[in-house]
Image (cartoon, rainbow, N blue to C red; front, side, top):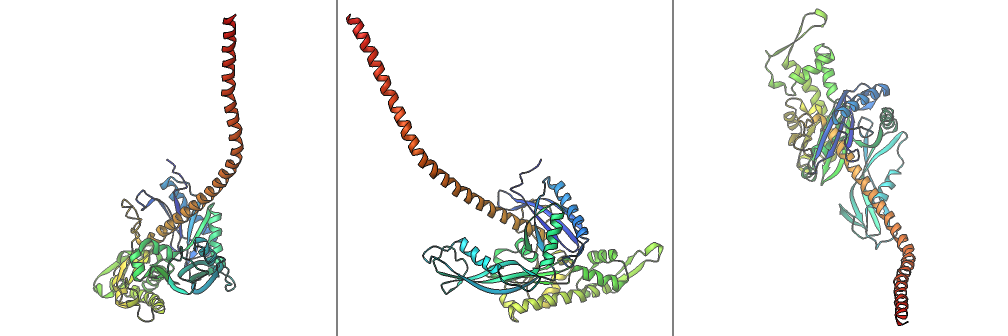
Length: 450
């Protein structure tokens, strides 16, 4: 059974290790229902950036076809996530002077202000991805979170501006279009993940979201419900796999399996006599690797990644992030499933840590696989897409109402003349009938008299 297309949305997560196409919609309780997921191995992406367009197109098509067959929905439009080491963020403040200070500030004024920031001149080869308002000022009155509904002549705001490389953004657009799909929106991946795994209370209290992917580790910091800082660190789970491969002299496939099945971020956990035997290549002798040695290799790289992320957090929190970010750290992404990672992060940063599962906004009957941290970005992208669809529908409805009102006015003006004519016609008819009746009666009377 094919479902209606206007009520569903599709998120496309183009990652370094996997490409995920997720189809979803809101159910009657306002929770997101996942209709289908398609997954394929990512071949043309390195550290979050598209390297080989042809291979990436094949991987996208494979994931989309799988999602279509599971959800029974024809996919035509997608919201895509973007990450990669080329992403950077900056702070900027700007203002507009409103023509009428006695009129209420509305969404259009905020759009005008945001569009003005979009015109900022960037470095050559860079493009603005997101303009995120942080706090507003109305006529010099500071710390306003929601200016809509206020009165004022000068509207000012501080912005968190996310910037990326034009070529990387265009390559993603090319891949999507060449796969036969329309690109409805591009969203920064850490923002999508944050929407999926963080609660509003955490965003208010202050929280750092760390999304450990295959090629990159993304960071998003929230405080007072507002995005404060974003960063992309060019290390992820693949670097750990690479270290195991080199350190143990095994092939990549075996290194990845070792990491998933036996890997631990805490070396003290394993005893010296715990050994894993790996089959040799083409009849060669099997290799024996101690789990203690394996976790030492993993530990060294994970510590490096966490310390880099913690440095970014400290740059925002001025050496005391623990006091500033009450909700601590939330780990998500495929890399967050590494054993004892939570304990290691708490040990290095001294901040409360939890693993973020994207079940905060998902319907209760969701497949356990989709509530895995691996799918946090995909879930966030679908949620983003649903928000954009509802905004577009509202705008279209508003426009239709305005057009209808103007039509009604013209019809009323034209209709007034028509109604008067009709009245005359209606009024004339009964008069004519009475006269005819009277004439007939009068004739009868005369006949009888004769």
